[in-house]
Length: 358
Image (cartoon, rainbow, N blue to C red):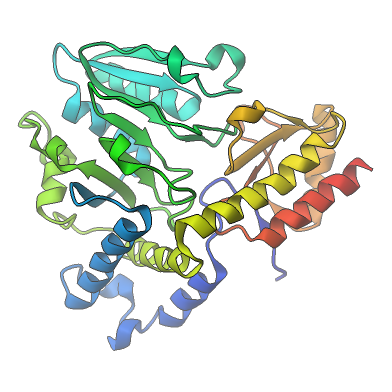
């Protein structure tokens, strides 16, 4: 089986060295004679994995001591409901900033549970850009302000986040967490499904400011309370042990690469290769996102016609490129250049795009 260039949008590429280490330890983790998948989640061996993952995440993202790190299940999609369940009380408004399909889905769940408002939206321009900070509308009784930091389907990304002082700023960072430096203190809460930059599907990261855990939540089912998981160190019930083990390995890999600063520089270099192939094509490739809103993680583009898109994708598949099809809702092409996608893959794609155009 030949190696492929994996540009899947999620689940996505994992570092090859991480996969090889997991393979080597699969049947005998840490001399236990068992796979990490067979260990008790309350054993000392797994506890060490669990605690190291929390510590590495805090170190890499410079998470202050006033925040808790939780490992939950249900993906980021469950957070669409957990957030309003916790915070959207009667008389309060859930304020949503719409930049794509995932923020729309978050709003849909919020509407089921309380009053909502749309503080900004770029839907009328096909989500080609991120709203201007001075165009956001706030309400004095906002329960929270919710945004999606990176938009996998449309290929846009917040470059600067709003400063919100009257309510918690809550962000779904599923597709760009750990890809760049962020100022954690700007946010009341950050959540992210793991399957883009953190590891395999199965575990969801929540970074939540401790004062938000003091919210009155007696009306919320026990398992859906952040406080439940905070008070039990995310061990209220059996966690996704293998996903947490893989998360820990990926975090160690990021540290070995030089941390967030080095990862961010590499991501900028990778994305530039592909955006340059688009920008230098005299319109043969047309990027979906406006330049100032372009994502470093998901690069979306079209060729002159749908037939040309299909020919481009078919030839790419023959050459070993995987996952370049655009999302089924918008079509076209998409290259997802998450942390573990190697520079060589982006060089190869850039070269292919130039050769195909010629």
